[in-house]
Image (cartoon, rainbow, N blue to C red; front, side, top):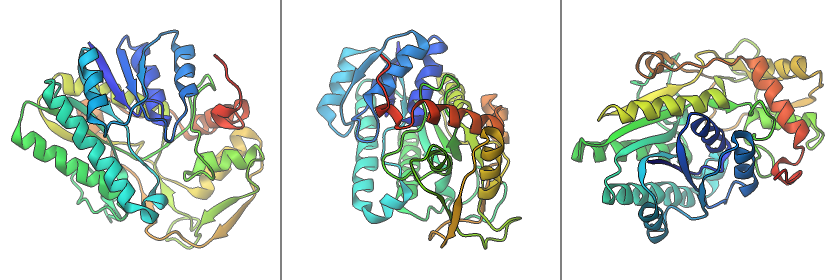
Length: 341
């Protein structure tokens, strides 16, 4: 039986596909390629030496999604598919609500129709909003402060309601903190469109000369050096969290949220310094105004994931920086750089 991976051509999706295949799982990938590249899936095949089915569809298209379930014996779903840029969600909120909510509703309807009730959902630490509780535990009040985060919070609530109506479902809600890094091979990594929204791709594109300087959004926060503090997690550690979550939903009928983070916070300037030390590259930067809605400090309490999923992050900040730089050096223009297969 196969694991369906929605949004499997994306940054976290491709790394999770690698770990699933290396763990002996059969996978099927669906992705509409609106914010990803088919070449990324070719790289997954190259890394693992294994093939898999790929369907270029939008999961909101019920007929196309039904066809995937009809043609394959699917055991469980890992659901990444969705729009994910906080800033863009503020500008075009209806697009985010339509895409993220409608897609998940259609997916759950088709899963229910085919009796597939094991789901690992890609949520986000943005559901916590600007909570004062540090480190953040899963029982913190949810109060997302932007449309992207609210779509994740709404989907979590929707899945809780689904479980309440039918307790034969088993659902893991994975609340990611800040994924960074790349696969150790340098073959897959984060390939954002335009100026990156996330810190480390921004830094690495400055280092490779694509962007002139890094913009740091505010240096007057109540932190050690005035810049925002976040919990950064290596994407391979994050991907392995999905394998542990898959094992969890296979062996239970429950719905549970889990933090996937390291439990350690780094400031923006600390990340810049770590990158410079790991790579020998100087990163010019300029401090600009804060972004509205940005919290001063945000890092996880990951103890529940250790206890219930037997998972914890293993890679440190130096490894995150080295792997990011390897990916960026080998692929200065992302997946457009060169076709390897």
